Amino acid sequence: MRWIWCVLACAALIGQAALAWAEALPMVSRASLLPQAAPLIAPSDPPMIRHSGPSLFVGRSETGLFAPPDPEELEKLRNYPAGDRIARLRTLIAQAEAGSKGYDAVQYGATIKPPADPTRLTIQQIYDWIDATPGQPHAIGRYQFIPPTLRRLVRQAGINPRQRFSPKVQDQLADILLADAGLRPFLAGEMDRVAFMNNLAKIWAGLPNDTGKSHYHGYAGNKATMTWAHFDAQMVHIFAR
Image (cartoon, rainbow, N blue to C red; front, side):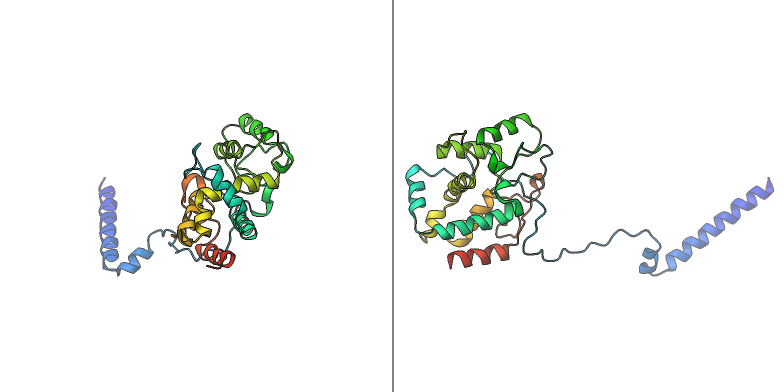
């Protein structure tokens, strides 16, 4: 039994010596003996546009985020002498939302896709696809309309669901959302550019607001897909102010 006590005593002495040695080391040396976590690296400035797939279009309620414009307001918008600028604005939004798929974009998280390209389907066929595939995202088209927003806009525009989900129809629906965001007062100089851009970011999650992030950053995987600097520069270029 005596040899066991000798072994234990030696082990205790070795442990105490090791602890004293470790305590005598400089802090940085002691830290180097421990497993190191991966260093935190500040993210670099994001590229101008990042296409990781369409972001989720956010317009979660039946009534949308803004009070809907009345028919007279929509008619004024259609007749406003800014058609080319509005078309370019739509293209900018589509860059953030739909990527290269454009009018035929389907939200990348949808595991069951529509039976054909969206522009080849009627609106009713899209409704049927939505109803038949619960539990997955359904944002669709160039402007990534989600189901409640799509149904609201179709009703508001007075479009027959048997009509094809054509580029023209998608643009028409997007124009209602532009009006919701205040396009006409912006064009008339009654709303400044940053306020209008922030309103657009409240509608389309792929656009950044003036913080540089999506208004819905982190919600359901949303993030801005272009930088604020790019968004702002393009708005200045399109509207010359």
